[in-house]
Length: 445
Image (cartoon, rainbow, N blue to C red; front, side, top):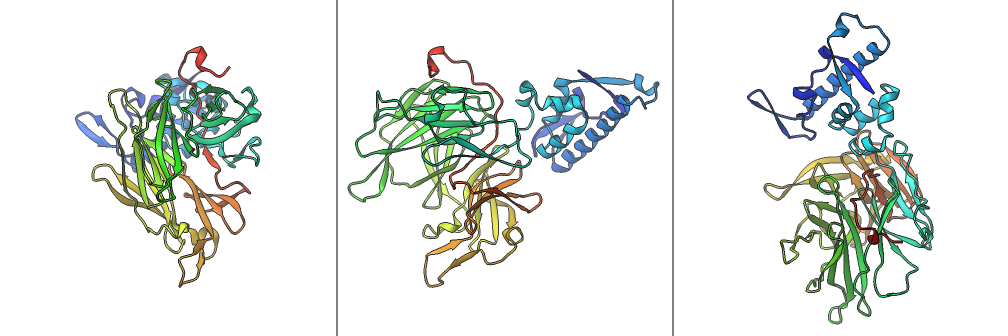
């Protein structure tokens, strides 16, 4: 399918938009000048592209002058998708209505890997390790199912984690090595799955915390972090004694048995950026650990402070980590719960700067959102944070008054009820690219 567009209406730069940057702040060259891509430029590009759509509709209806139509250029499917991929998600969703041929691009599996990804909703598992369910967003992707019927023994899977469209499970029927963990990574969008090699047997009295880390913007490979923990005989608190890291590129586990720390990590949600996994801690800090690299004989790890209020006794002010445009972000309510503040970590100076302040008074329709005794440290808030996505302008909150999970739109400032969901529900955005080719015996048969 080729679309004919009058050249007078298409002004997207050299090679018809090939050099237009896709993110705010990126630069490109026009003649001898360096031009910085800003939000106003993005809006202007959207207007120019919209005028091109108008010209397309006119040409399809035969209302264009025959002389003007001779001065044309041709847009192939690949070029249309290349231009659309540089526009904001909400604009792209509106452009589906231009014509049927454009709408078909969004259902094509090949082009779905290039277009902005639409969120589907929140994943959760029924009690007693039942079926996997998804609470779908009203504007989310409705083509994804979670029955997992394409996987053998899918009724015995336990949901562990979700990261950028991939899902981590444990399998509960293997009995050949009961002290080991048996992980499976699945992609419901492409109906593929990979069984990971068994981990090392656990020490008596120990348990594990597993996390899936995947960032398709930087690599097609994923990591699984398996932290071994046990109660310290000296202090009585849980101590991380070992970490095993699985890399899908090498298809092997790398163990760091010298890893020992009393840092109490909060596993969900976590962020993988530039080869580093970031997690929150109870001490109001960020715990960072590098992914393994063949040229590094050790696994580097460190901590740094979070912005906002710090009071471990008052868990109502705990926030969560997120990522937007390759930058680490942090969201946390203020002390009275009336505002949600968002910070970004400036990579140049390693300092936090405020980007958003969202009014929860307007969202909930009341001002009293925190309750407790002024002479006590035992306070509680009417809501808690689950996760957020700045690129799709959505925040997920747990309403403790109604015991419902709600989505909050940053654009409209409105709350939308999603249902009576578990607090450990996982944010899910389908990922349409297939797994890299691996050996046949690496699949769970």
